[in-house]
Image (cartoon, rainbow, N blue to C red; front, side, top):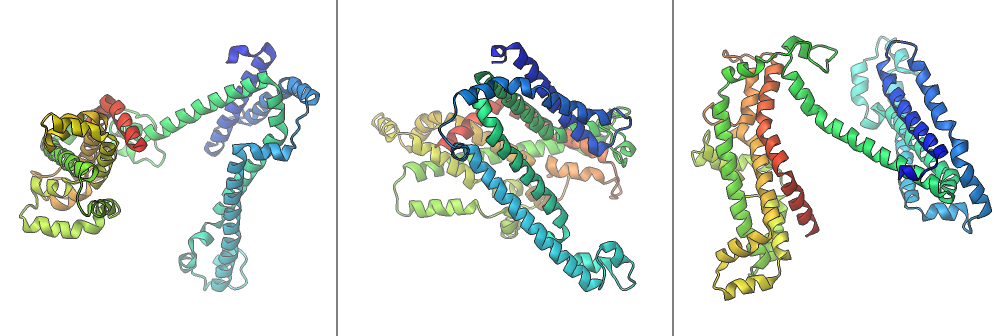
Length: 459
């Protein structure tokens, strides 16, 4: 695509891309306030690299636009673009934020005058002896306490909408008139997409990077007011210290056993229930399925008290059974499998019956092989959920013999005397060891996860 441009437009395209990169770099550096006078030259250089190539880039497009004028008005042409509707949406959002800013500003100053009569600002109110700042801030609502942020965000969005509108009005016709300029803008779009993807990846992976790096620091370095992105000295002893302080092998065994049992239970019950809801015929089927969907809306924090009482009466507190039993069924997995089973044509079921298969034979030899990606996805998600489960194991386990690894990591901040210490580097090391199996599982089986989720969504 880039090779189809002539030399002038190639140079202009590269210049503008470098200019935008320098502009973003300069905006990122502004809050950091680096030393040196070179930072003041970034913005002028970036502006020059962006603006100087414009006459050369737009010359052909302006000439062709004048030779072939459009039969539509600019307003009609802008309305035909799908991007215009998005601009209208952001304009409404900006106006709502500015309205919140006005309301918050009025409420803030009204509350301030109530607590400090005659004061126009908070600094003036602090000079009054009867003014209690804590009571004043407690009396403010969310909009009033954050009204400057609402105004700033609203103005930024409104300015961005204005720039995009000016682009659609004046620049877009020039781009549409010049084929080479369209190619250049396609290059800009591709570079922007890759840059956005890289930014999302960096933001997503930074917590993992920070956890790994923190596990190799000393406790003093980790607790510094100004954090370091790279350890001054690698402390590899954090990992052996974790293994000595807590029985991680026992935590790992408990987690593995309970997770596998929960996965098998959710998979087995989910398949059976999904078969009944998709291929079975009985009264009240739709009503029962609606009840299953209703279970998706109830969080465990609402139901854990009756579940805990039931587990206690079964004498399953501080046992594997207590961890596993409430998690043997998943309404979400039943829904996913039902949607996939419904997509299987009933002719396959009839063919299985002709061959002498019963219900279990049909499920095992017909439905499961045809819905294999979703079954693998359900198994992986169930394994990950069981491995990362913290709330219920924290409630039901009391001794080292039954704790899972998610609860065990939290116990690392206690010494042998039961006192809490600031050993966050060792806690990070324990967290790294806890996520290694899940990360490896995802890297190996990620294609099955994506395939199964996409198929479930299409069904």
